Length: 337
Image (cartoon, rainbow, N blue to C red; front, side):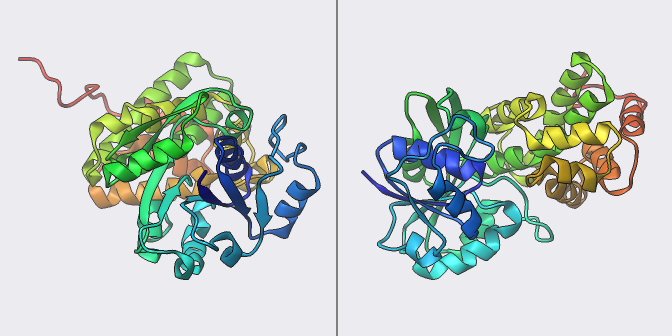
């Protein structure tokens, strides 16, 4: 049995808490918000947005960050929303021992700095060994033990394997990878493409349209990732095309659902309010556009998503503009002899 602290009691944090407690670990779940821990303490089998999930009685709930990190947990899992990761990491740093493994399960790019979440955690808690875990893994399904596979990434092989051992079970298979950057870029930018996929459904278009969008979406993500130094293989893997497919096609996806409402003509604020949860793709869309400019990478889908989100461009017009762009080959690396 290992001691684990999970930061963030949203749906993803609760789902991973259920998984880790089920694996036999001693888990403490921290939230800044007393309303979250209070609701979980009052009824562990009626969890908001996680129907059918049960939080084990063995899980300790706390709003005290010092208490959450007390006695040196063997693993810390970050599920805090990306805009708050630096704030929480900074507050946590003084409690963390040298060599503690922190695995990031939050998806996003920091606004302004354009850092990934592992970068942010490493900057604020330099004494920790930081890893990442990602893949097609909606909280609603993981919390009910529905099978899936994900990938754990770390600079050190031993750290990635440690995370693999902590999480893996009969319904949650974990692979390992050294490409932390590729995993993080894929997991963050897929939310941007999911907004576009949702808009396609909202507009009433079909499977062909969405399949084409997903395919070209992973091209854009991989193009940027490789320019930043990530490995091409990661974007064909679980944190790339795997996570992209599930986020673009599932009703569990808050990004898809927000995009659907945009496609129906709702404003961004109306869509966010109706979804009722953080829509990470909104922040990531701006960051993706800034990264594309920084690295000189063409990302037409990302450009149009930003226009819909922040310039009130109708989704239908954005899609039309993508279709009538200048004619090009599918892959510039392929040519006729």
